[in-house]
Structures are given as C-alpha cells and as structure tokens.
Image 1 (tube, rainbow, N blue to C red):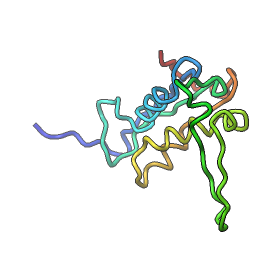
Image 2 (spheres, rainbow, N blue to C red; image 1 turned 45 degrees about the horizontal axis):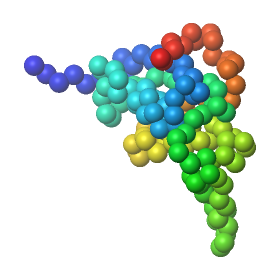
Image 3 (tube, one colour; image 1 turned 90 degrees about the vertical axis):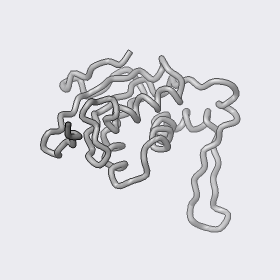
Image 4 (spheres, one colour; image 1 turned 180 degrees about the vertical axis):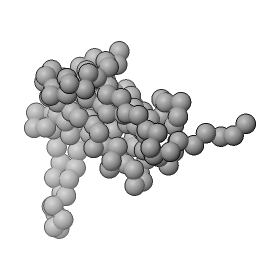
Length: 141
C-alpha cells in the first residue's frame, strides 16, 4: 500500500463559521488552527497548503478564564530604544478584538512559508454579521 500525497490541483477548500462567544480563547484558537492547516482532513499533507477558510464572528465577546483580562499582556516595539509598548488583554479587546484571536492562532501555526497564506484565510468580524454568506459556511458546533 502506498502513502497518499495530495497534489496542489486536488485541493478543495471549504468555508467554516465559528462563534467566538461560545468558546474560550485557547479552545477557539485550536479549532481555527486545525481548520486552517487542514489537519482534520483525510488528505492532509504537511508540505501542501490544503486548509479551509474560517470565518469568526462575535470577536468582541471572546471569553477567557481566570484573571487573564488583567494579567495577560500584549507587547509591540517601535524599533527605537525604549520603544516597547504594553497593553493588557482588556485594552486590546477594546481597541481591536480581532488582534487577540489572530495572535493566538498565529502562535499555534507552524513557523514556515505556508503560515502567511494560511492566516490570510482567517476572516474575523467583531459583530454577528459577515459578508461571506454567499460562500455558505458550515457552522462548527
């Protein structure tokens, strides 16, 4: 029996819809990363990008456990000496809720050439409405 290796022309991408208010941040990021990489498919091939599109709604209603809203910090740096900026999770959610989900998913993806293309298929929306109804995404329970 031969090992199956998927070709680039055989890729079929599905659309998935996920409600961020129903899960905690970590569990949500695991499901999203799994769908973006295509690991839940039978035809998974590590060197081929065969993942699906994921639409996340209600990003502003994300849940976390414990005191993470106050204790978890996000950093960015301007590139100049002393240019580090620090924000708490609650401040980041106020400013841009999609950043929280995007950074959590990015941390769970493999660090390789396929990661940027996979993350580009992640669509995050703060409210319940999204413009991808024409693709008829399947809801993940």
